[in-house]
Image 1: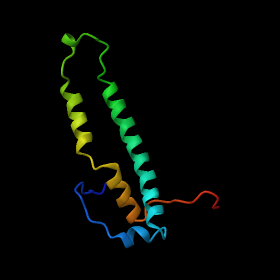
Image 2: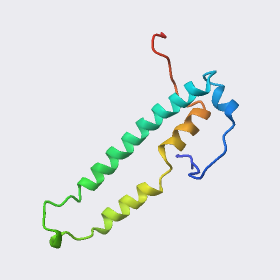
Image 3: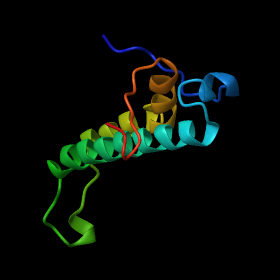
Length: 103
């Protein structure tokens, strides 16, 4: 079961962001790293789905709108941004992180 994440702008309590790492900048770095992972995965999924509809035709007159391709693109546009998802995961304690050199 997926949790519904609001995609609108939300004010965050900085103390809650600082709490897991003890430093705001470290927290932002963890969230940023996770966000990049999520964005890369989303991009890969979208690319794979759109590749199914790829046309080998180079002539612009023969290229047609593909309704399914448009719907897939719109679906991904409506998804919450990776930064929002990563921030929610971080605040809920779902992210595991460690610093280089730590064992």
